Structure formats: structure tokens, C-alpha cells
Image (cartoon, rainbow, N blue to C red; front, side, top):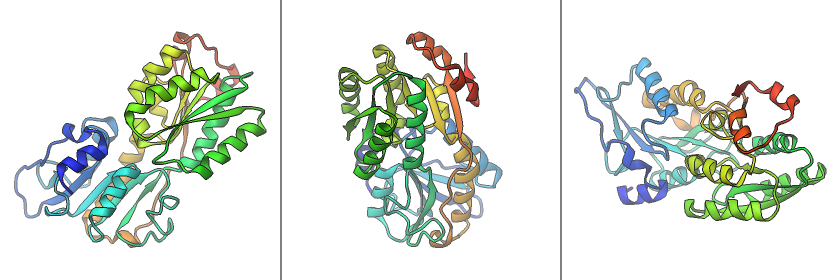
Length: 310
């Protein structure tokens, strides 16, 4: 895979990673290919490499990071985050182990099953379809009286069947769900504007690597429109979003991704390494954001939050 194709797939985030991080030459260097959508200094990657250091894989000493020419270079494992990156890695190689962090490993066809992934891919599935429904329930609770809400959807990630389930669940609560799909970062602003124009009282930003990496833009757009919004990771509420529900992404990379990477770097076969999934989910509410947009959240919901930003 060439660097140009990699940057196009990930929206330019590769520029924030060193092409190759070389350090002292120990008895063996481990080579990690990175197909990721966030910069190297993102909190979850800082946590990942701190934990890898504790496990004996030290960036700049015995751990070499590649973000270009993944297949032609001496890469031991590829780390791919998000469906687009996993598919790119999958197209590039059927032999190099791939550690995927994505929304639905089995549903997207990256693994045969959680217990026995098969092939050269294993990783972490973050339960996107199940949690998108739970987030929708919380969002409806957050805007009592709203008869219409909207979903911001990455068409590269969310399937039509998942959207039908969300529509049915909203209808059962007496709420109409309008769907606003995007495929590229440049389409996000118009989609949010269309949701507001359609009369949506709130916005569910569905699980997506593209939407996660566009969160700062989304925060700004929904704030300007006074549109309450729900996000897939709790940390997104800490960063300025209104409500976040799901696994803590920093904890996910520190505790699960690091352990799986260490196993693959030491020679475990991905076909035999079960896909893991988070087991703890947090609800974070940002009352500062709520106040700024003039939205009062129900007291019962705020009291249930694991963390409240004031």
C-alpha cells in the first residue's frame, strides 16, 4: 500500500504520524504498520503506546512504526482502525496479521465469528449497532416532547438493516427518525443543516471512525444550531459534546488493543485469537454544553450519568 492511497483513505491523519520511528537497534525490532484516522498524540494512542512500553515494546527502541508501503516493508502486524482502513489492509494482504478496531467485526465480514475469527484479521468490535440503539433511547429521553429526531449516518459503516431497526425503535416511542447520510467529511455540515431544517429536535451521531475524527467540526455545527446531540464515546462529551455513551476509548486501547497487539507481535496467529469487545459502558453528560445551547436536561437522566461536566 502506497502512502498516497493511505492518506486518501484516512483523510490526511497520516501526516501527524512519523513515517518510520527508528531508535537504538536491539537484538530484534518489531515492525508495526499503522492505518489509523487519528493523530499520534491522540489520547487513546498515547495510552496504547504507554502500555506497549510497559509490555516491552518501546517505540524508538525495539518498536518501529510504519505508515507507508506496509506490504513491501518488513511489517509484522498492521493496526487498522475503522472500516475503511480495515478494508484497505484486507485488500493489501492476506498473510500479514491485521489487528482491527471497528464497529462490527462479524457484521462487516472481517471475522467469521468472535471466538474463531479465521483468516489474518482479529481485533476489537465496539458493538456499534447495539449501542447506536441504546444511544437513541438516551437521546429521546434527553429531549422530552420531541416528535422528531435525526441520525447522522456514515454510509460506509452503517447498514440499511441497522437503520430500519433504529426507525422502528423510534416509532415505538412515538418519535419519527429522519436519516441523513454522508460518505465524505465534506458532506457533514450540509447533513447536519438538513437535519435541523427537517425539524429534528436532536441528533444521534452514529458510530463511525469518520464521524469520530470529525467531532470538533460537529461540536461546532450543532452548537451553532442549538441542536442537542449524542456521541459514541464518553470522552466526546468531555471534549465539548453534549452526551456520550459507550466504552471509554482510552481504556479500550490501553487495556484491550495493547494486549492483542502484544500477542500478535510475539507470534500469535490472528485466526486463533478471539475478537474482544468492551464490557463496561459509561454515560457522560456535559452541562456546560447544555447551558450554552439553552437546553435543560431531565434531572433523572443527569443523576444516572457516570460523569457530569459542569
